[in-house]
Image 1 (cartoon, rainbow, N blue to C red):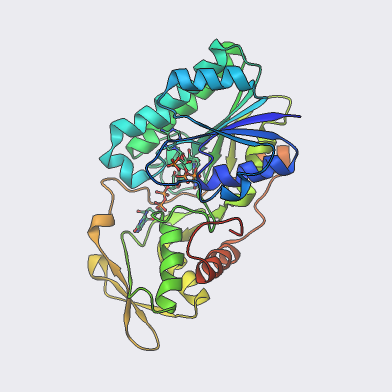
Image 2: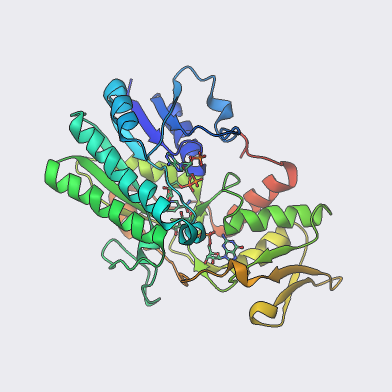
Length: 343
Ligand code: NAP
Ligand code: G4F
């Protein structure tokens, strides 16, 4: 039986990946951070699975990582743990670097020092491309230009992964994943914030929704499909870094329109800049407002990935388009209040 070790298992991707690996017959070992409240909502349905194991652990604790890896001897390690919120990284830049950058090298070094024969997946990100002009979709060959402490920390982790591959012959690779969403997406990321608000406004449980930059453009895919790409990357003969994306781009504004439409509300935009509002086309009621507190010190305006390499080499491509994804998320939010196995 193959053994996998996952950091970040309580997050969106970690929970889907754990489900995928268990369905493939893996034994799944994972770390949970100690917290004063329960953080396991996304994996509660797996807790009784005979092949699913959790341990207290943290990417800031080298000895903990070393001890666990030496004991478990996993065949595959998936490093998904991170302070993953771009806006928050401007407020806690040092902590973000500690977890996202140094945390990755702690894990790589624990693998090297404990002499574990394993394969390593690093959760790299399209934020690495941050400030690249929107001339063409971004591929594995596009130069990096991070625009946040999060992006800078992930850049270090990207190169640390490449370095341990080149220096020590470790089977290590980066998945450069573009934004991917689902009903399990954290509630402060823009898509989930919008789909949850659209559902609650429709149900009369929330008056309106306040957002930041409506003009940012993203390449949004379905998280459940993106964890399949992570697994595929670790099943090859040679480790290779891949962009994982849909190749299609939409604005936050378009996402709002689609989500409210799915909830049965049509949005009409009025005004501009921070004074722009989205009103209910039928009643004129204000449903969407702007608050500049959600603007970032530096914004990533445009992210669109070129998934040709992963499609050609691994046969992976996104199956769910944005309208279908919005439907999945809004319908979930209309019928559920929290994360769960159904999401
Ligand atoms: P997420 O939902 O925010 O989950 C992050 C996970 O990291 C949670 O399990 C969290 O634990 C854990 N974590 C945070 N700090 C930690 C620490 N000090 N030690 C150990 N674990 C820690 O993120 P996600 O959307 O699933 O993303 C997974 C990974 O992919 C992240 O590395 C993210 O940066 C990267 N990524 C995401 C996207 C995307 O669009 N979703 C795109 C590209 C790359 P708690 O539950 O205890 O907070
Ligand atoms: O949903 P977001 O917070 O995601 P962002 O910044 O693109 O980062 C996510 O994707 C990355 C991959 O590209 C991951 F590496 C990262 O871990 C994370 O998962 O914001 C998307 C866009 C931004 O341009 C932001 O300025 O939406 C804009 N936005 C507008 N109003 C907002 C809001 N973002 C948030 N979170 N909240 C708002 O109210």
